[in-house]
Amino acid sequence: MRLLVLGGTHFLGRHVAMAALERGHEVATFTRGLTGEPPPGAQALHGDRDDPAALPAALDGWQPELVVDTSCQTRAAADNAAAVLGGVHGYAFVSSLNAYRNWPPGPIGPENSEPTWDTADDDYGPNKAHAERVLAAAVGPAFLTARAGLIVGPHDPVYRLGWWLDRISRGGRVVVPAEGMDQPISLVDARDLATWLVEMAERGQGGAVNAKGPVGMTTYGGLLDVCREVTASDAEWVPVPEEDLLAAGVQEWVHLPLWLRQEEARTAWDVDTARAAELELTTRPLAATVADTWAWMQEAERPPLPANRPAPGLPPELEAQLLAGHGDQET
Image (cartoon, rainbow, N blue to C red):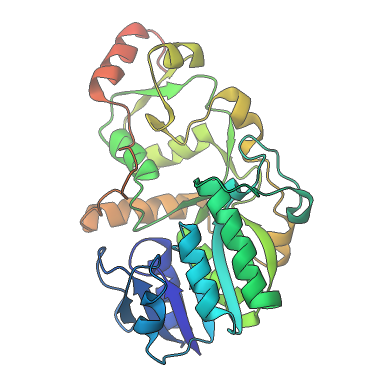
């Protein structure tokens, strides 16, 4: 079938295009053309999603039967796609847990039991919720919205897991959040999510799905331990209490990537995934994802960070300050 990937040259979209090609589809990607070319075998279409004339001009009569949308960030992008792609057999849209009004911190129950944003705010969560509504109205029962959580794997430009792998690989004393090592965390491999999205579009599956790794799959400390094993590092954890991290100006999620303060971490990943399991969204073992990400990092040129995102990781001077103040805390 003719499958259009909105996105397709970056991270998740690239894996979607590859999965669709492997499943025998005729694949085209629609991007601005700023982040490279799609995988070999996919046709590259270019344009700005915020321009209502761009997508029809790029398609130029090439009518997709399936759509996987990984790149919608604005209300205009959603409105323009809805105007052109409403008649497809299946449309899988990558939304976010941020579409929920109550996340973070959660917890989040079954999809239809939780309110999503309905404000006009030009913010990430409200924009995703708007996109869900307008695209669902245009496509109908064949519209699936995948409210994604934490996506990791090869080709990830956001560099959160990547920073931990690089830092841990250098070894030595490594600052970690003392209370945070036991916090639950769940991740989904981009390759598994991509294949599943293509399958959902093929089936014309509709509805909302919390598309994340299963609750209880690992902890923050468990993830860092896997990173240490994969990189064969001699890193020693130096647990620093949350109070001291915050007093020193450590920013959650940014300076210590993927770390959340206790009050949010307790419930942030407590998100119901029963429907995802029913629809057979699975993710490979965490060790395989981390190992493959590390292997890709050794072999490939690092992609640039997405625009308007702070560079993740603990600044060296802040790390040195924290290590000096916690010299007897090694584990």
